[in-house]
Length: 351
Image 1: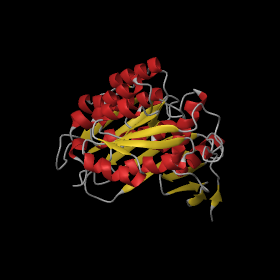
Image 2: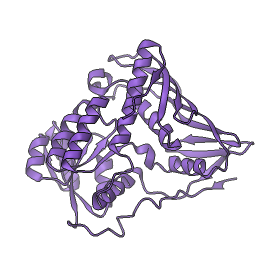
Image 3: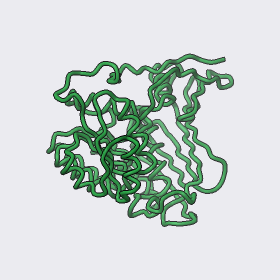
Image 4: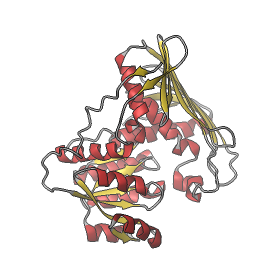
């Protein structure tokens, strides 16, 4: 038996069909970084009426050239040269984490709106610098916390908000994967460049998911971490016990060592449960066995992100995944590492 629960997508304007009047028919978009994720960005740009790709940048010009040929755009090896030559309306930052602050500020100071991959930056202080640059330049930023745009997550949030399962009493989030696989770029495993290991990269997804689903920020937490990775100096596992502003407790358990892969978030209510397998399926229990929820059709997450950013630019409004919100995720991550180092409970800094 399937339970039908369509996703409410009324927040998003389908700019592929009906655009809001703009000063320019199309806004030019350049992508910094020619890694695996670049294709997701360029495909979404192509499918969003109001945006047009103009350039790609990578220090390895050959990699940039291959993507440029596929999308009939220009390739550069220097992002400053590209911005000063192409003057793109939007810059997408899909670079190693330690480059986010430098590139975001340079682009913002030249009037470019930003699609900034998560995590926003290496620290709260770096986030503040980006936010200040954006304020001075009066540009829009969307931070790519994709959890907000994934169909299963949106359906789970709709059920939670409906109240049909009663009061939410706890959340358990589990993520296991081989984090130290050979194909992972080395910079991910160097803390000074990545900001941390599995908790910085995947743990921020879990923190974000929990906060976004509940519309509550993390208030306080305790955490532990282990360091048994086959390379690098970052943690390979972590366990976090956190409490949200409304008092709801949650756990995050992540392992990057060898074992069976798992990605599940279980939400427990007074009248039932939800089992959220992000990117795969959503299941509901009203006191009996889990039944799969039919979430219906949904646009791909990257397309929804670009619709969101376009609407914010057109309306001179905030994106639904704002830099202020993304800063809060980094504040929680900093508290995680402080707790893991000291063994003490930490209060999460608020802006």
